[in-house]
Length: 121
Image 1 (cartoon, rainbow, N blue to C red):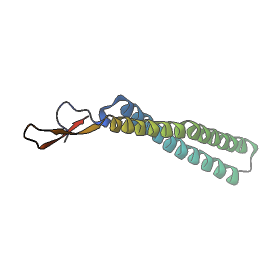
Image 2 (tube, rainbow, N blue to C red):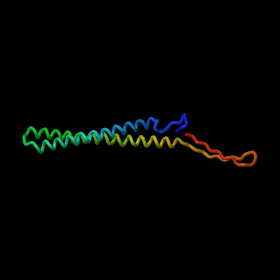
Image 3 (tube, one colour):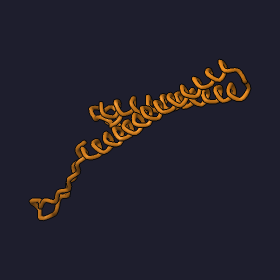
Image 4 (cartoon, helix red, strand yellow):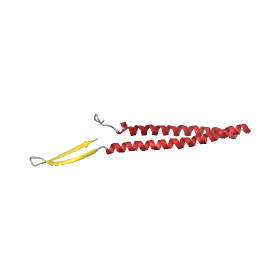
């Protein structure tokens, strides 16, 4: 547990933005991929079991809609996912760069040596 007054990297605004961006990218990719797969499979079922002209038009709409949905979900969801993860990694790196340590050696009046160390977060 961190002492009071210290800031953990999960409290940084960059981390929060990256986390929400990554989560929305994961959800958009997952839901869009599932809906697109369902739409393409319905279109394929309609195409295979129907011999009428009006039915083949409906299957074409399902197939095209599914492919457009898949393209949009992959074209928007994956970049959100990746950029969110990059923001999270940047927040972790910036937090770890804030930690500074120093080690000092100084003589004492009695002729000994005094070692000192300091840590700053």
